[in-house]
Length: 114
Image (cartoon, rainbow, N blue to C red; front, side, top):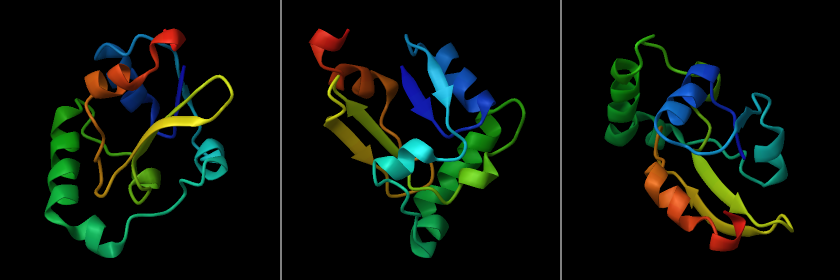
């Protein structure tokens, strides 16, 4: 399963894009904090060309035309944990929307976990 702090429409987009497991939302960021991932993007990262481009792309890609504002400043991160809750793979972004492709994330899941 995956846990994210994104809005429900963003989670639905991932499911529609082929994520083959349940997605849960953690809008309060409890899991992010427990993993030490509650660092915010700096002002320079927020105002950088990658963040601005990703915000516009995200707005136009969503039929709703909305961005999950409460989490815009959160540093994007993807972490894969093993059954003992140890980090086996991670990606910490440096701009708004800086996530690896879903295929890369799925490839990083240990084969015994599938």
